[in-house]
Length: 193
Image (cartoon, rainbow, N blue to C red; front, side, top):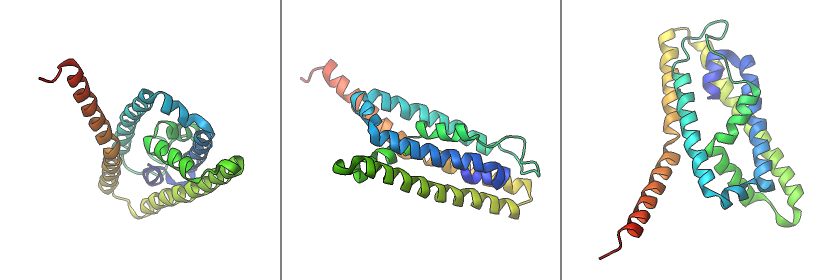
């Protein structure tokens, strides 16, 4: 998404998106480390609902990227994500949740909880800022090389398809879980002979 933003809007207009992703994820890591993951452990259906909403939202974003149009000097007809939109996106991004929970489970030290939570949050803020910057700069670099509207359309379509493809692990997990649930219900409703 940051590469598509860099391509379509340039680096300067992508900075709020980049900062929103970086700071939004750092806040999420802190909140998950602080205990919000326990909510999902208590109510697993809430986590499943979040996954479904996330898939729908990411499909909509892929559509926006695919239909972004050609690159203009003014940045195109659309607009890049605002800071708050990009930060809020982290909270519906299942990959961000998985990473935040994994980070908390792996790197937080019980005897030094607050110190380790602060260090982990800061480390991931810096890491995401660097990673996000490289994606946005990559898109901005491609922007400088491409003047053909057809090529921009192809790149946007490829980026949209890659975003949809990135949903495969989460979607397949949902389908697998639904299959187990249906099988379990079938066994309860129709007893074995």
